[in-house]
Image 1 (cartoon, rainbow, N blue to C red):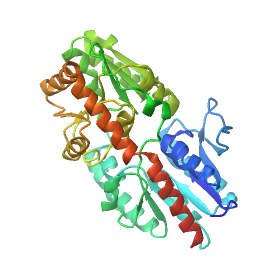
Image 2: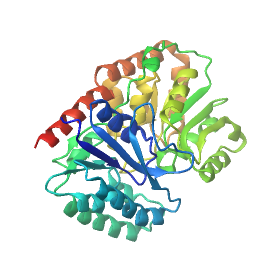
Image 3: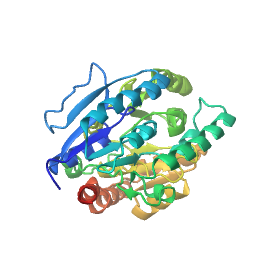
Length: 377
């Protein structure tokens, strides 16, 4: 590894301080001695430089309109990236695939960081009619397959290797927070609070979670993550007379890692929630929030998809429920409330699994070794 090696990470979609892109990958590479820059959309509230970690933030114009972003975002990213003459370009959005293809030269490396299963994601987009989705999905597959032939692939989930067999898995495990890991686990039977962290959307179970106060007396649900004001209002309407039992921190804004960690630290929660409807996109994913809940010592209550069921069974860290069976959810919450010792055991099991094998520390060393290998080719 050469300290003069220039690394440029690129996104036109994510917040500049996105946990995976910035806190995990960019900061880890910077601390390993690389010269690291991050190109990301900036608004007036974002700082263009992080003084603590010295990762250079290169601002891109932030577009509120999706179509303008998809058209003009890649164009401005390409113009700026081309001038930088980096040794490695590492991009994080499928709309930048053509930019990555243009940037690839004989003497550099381009990495496509696959955050999602984009084909199944396209097939569940609510704003596309079904026939259009099928056409777009097929076109995307063909377009992607052709353009990524000379790129390296960085995979955020285990099962993505089924689609990208030559990819390198750098899994999205959590950064260990010493305060969280060292916080004493103490289950309190008088808690009435359930927690959901991460982006809030319909396909991530917004209305399943919003229904909880109606079916579980005096239970409050806290949502810590970006949620549109329109969806938040719809969820409150769904909760009807229990609308005040839903609490949102992140309406129309990105919630940074430090803010989420404060919620893990400062409250006593019955469990961390992930009651998702069944969609192809999430059936095989191990959610990042699972690992975060586990590191914070929270039992998990999640949908009983086969992969999720196997994960919970393996680590003995929570309870799975049929998302369409209200009684199973009632029973799961009441079980954790009425059996604090068993709930505490789940908390310890989850935290131990994160400490032993499911933290970013294991992936950080893989990332740095991989970069060293790519630069020494």
